[in-house]
Image (cartoon, rainbow, N blue to C red; front, side):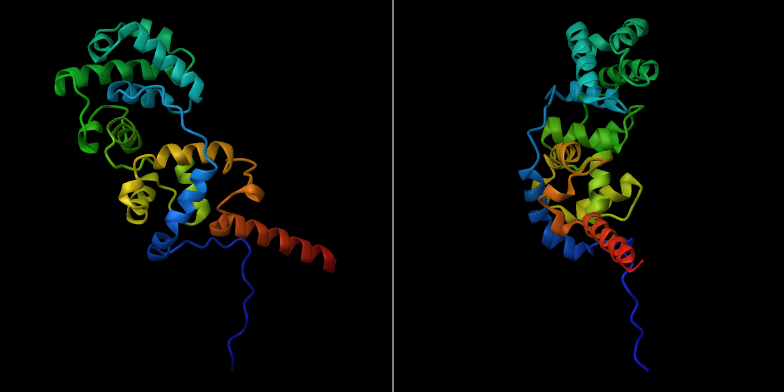
Length: 240
């Protein structure tokens, strides 16, 4: 007796095997780069990249940049911010999300940089994540974007794109990071996050992604499943 034919599930999520993903990743990344505008970096100094990234959680980029610029203009460096008054910092960053918590965080981060690291932002994930409010994403942003140390920061854009393409099955950003470092060549880790951030803002958007004009749709499981669902729905409609 032959095997029964099971029609494909249009909603099924297919995850690329690591070996297969490694073969495709350069083409995927070049396609993403081709549609990603240059990323704006408000700062290149490691301390201010650290502070900006702490402020950025659940806050629009333009609000984050204005707040961090305000802190820079008032305090100039880690030593200045370490001696800041909470109320003044809170006032400067009042438009960022969770500003009351973040005011405490940035002052504390400045004090730790001054007291524990002799005024220099540490250059390892392990040391950076000893600072309250600094997780792996923030640490990796600091390493890659301000120090040029290869690291992949998995924020909401990277997480969404990796899952949609089929590069990662995980909802946990840390597990996605672990998988991406096995797939993405080390020489393109620096710049990987900013490129995907811009792609996520302009093409692979959370709502209303521009799949029809996307340069990597041929590799994308989200696009294939979406097309299958549309085709399946149309066939069902025609039969009714």
